[in-house]
Amino acid sequence: MDISVVVPLYDEVESLPELTSWISRVMDENKFTYEIVLVDDGSSDGSWEMIKKLKKNNPFIKGIKFRRNYGKSAALNTGFEAVQGDVVITMDADLQDSPDEIPELYRRITEEQYDLVSGWKAKRHDPLSKTIPTKVYNAATRRMSGIKNLHDFNCGLKAYRKAVVKNIEVYGEMHRYIPVIAKWAGFVKIGEQVVEHRPRKYGKTKFGMSRFINGLLDLMSIFFVGKFGKRPMHFFGTMGTLSFLAGTIITIWLIVDKLEAIAKHVPHYRDITQQPLFYIALVLVIIGSQLFLTGFVAELVSRTSHDRNRYQVEEVI
Image (cartoon, rainbow, N blue to C red; front, side):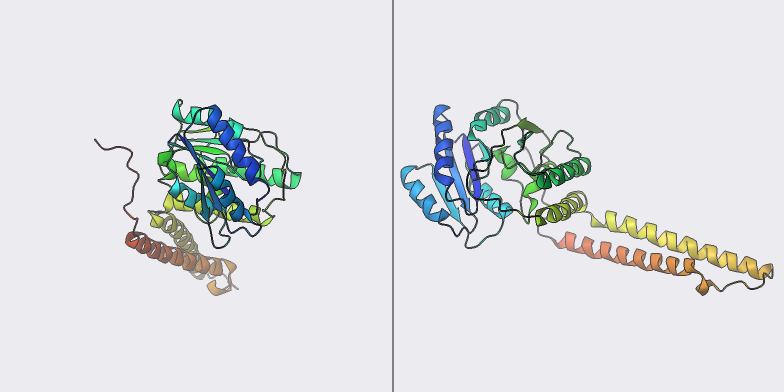
């Protein structure tokens, strides 16, 4: 099978007939073999009934229904487990992503040998309250991940080699950072394609302002897990050592200073416990010890994890 199209959706009953018809037309015009995997993330507006109706007229449609709303990451991960196509395309169900982009995305994966091609909505039809924070997060993600050539990590329109989606796990709200997850898994040939961003035709957006706070927390999580997930002691141990050493050095300096004052018979010299530096040193030593203990505990958890020795093997001969 050439292409699998994964569409996560939540309350998008109005757009589904037009979207699936559009995808099928593009596939037929280019003579692709394909499947459309619609993942209903707990819709309550009749989306699942619409999917069953569309399935009767289009045998290439497959549907997966969640009992409740779990989020876009869960829908994508479940869709990735079900796909069979050599190239996997993801797009949103709100008709803001154009299926006409699919042939070029497919070509870049198959001919230019990219592992992942991410869409870039250079011209967006969104308010400033959404576009400005998005630009800030994209800049931060580029800097922290080292993926310098992507302008829009969160674009729903992406193309993947099948091996990518079968070897990554998307959870929480990590769908924003799939290129970063793919890179940590060893899929480093990541490209970008300018795509059309269409105005929303039906319904309203499902994302509020909380997505920006969650986005920052998810970025920190994915960076830490990707870099230190299998060696947490390297992070906590380093921070703990630096904190403990700083506290120890301050303590030694206070003791030496006190002894020198006694030797010189300096009058009215304050006791060590009356100096603010003493409490700073005490806090640094305690924090350093706690970070060290955290590192040991994290190391024990990592060593007993079921995937502690799970690594990506590209080829065996």
